[in-house]
Amino acid sequence: MNKLKIAILFGGCSEEHDVSVKSAQEIAKYIDTEKYDVTYVGITRSGNWLMCEKPCPDWENGDCCPAAISPDRTVHGLITLSNDNCRTIHIDVVFPILHGRFGEDGSIQGLLELAGIPYVGCDIATSAICMDKSLAYLMAANAGIAIPAFQILHPDDTPEIDIPAYPVFVKPARSGSSFGVSKVYQESELDAAIKMALQYDNKVLIEQAVSGVETGCAVLGNNNLLMTGEIDAITLSHGFFRIHQESAPENGSENAAFIVPANLPLQKQTELKETAKAIYRALGCRGLARVDMFLQEDGRIVLNEVNTLPGFTSYSRYPRMMKAAGITISEIIDRLISLAKRG
Image (cartoon, rainbow, N blue to C red; front, side, top):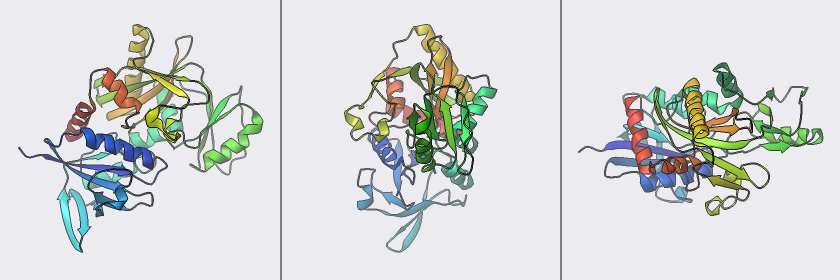
């Protein structure tokens, strides 16, 4: 049997580089090498593309050679350079386990569309929309989904903030894993929070804090053939959820606890799953996404955000939710590759 040739892209130039490497390590652990011929390509923080043996914390120091996806459709794969010899490697499917900018925002998806190579995850437009929280909110609201009240600021704007009540979240519009996010409790804290967010993006979101239980739903599939994992719920002892910035997340979060399945009535769990699928369809998602929502005391469900390439680390929520529904990481990988092949 001819094995499908899969390229796993990881690392990247975003602030989520380390999370991506950890995600790639988990995928390397669980991908079926009897079924797939796997090539690993790491992207350094400075943007160098290197084919390597396997993802690991010091992967750049191993046996690597320059490699990049060719936009030429007749190549349909990688061009590598080793010992001054250039060769091509045909690739059937790319799994871009790249989080944040240049991986989750439509950038890599555009390159793969030019190259004509099927890939795991959402297309260019949906990736860009979901990466920009303000655009995702507007599209979701247009589909009848409840969203937080928010305002947008750019660097040269004169802040005319109309905030009905504190606290608010100040966040980069196009960043992930809570980088650059501040919870602001009074007006005197606002300027510093805006300056911090501007370090990550020139578009800043000021968003009304939503009270309620923070929940998530893992969604897998295309069009109307969707399945979900079990709903999870996050409880916080203080602050807000930012596990990917903690020093040892593998040992548990410093301020957050996860409950999977969430301790909620079955009817409400079903409603959350159906709402997540409605959001997924409204934003044009395909392959996979993690849809985060708030469940308020009155039962109202409010969109938090949509992650189109959620983490696959040992502590990530997406694989945990799927595992609770009886779906292993190996099975997730198989289904994602199959969905990518079908287009």
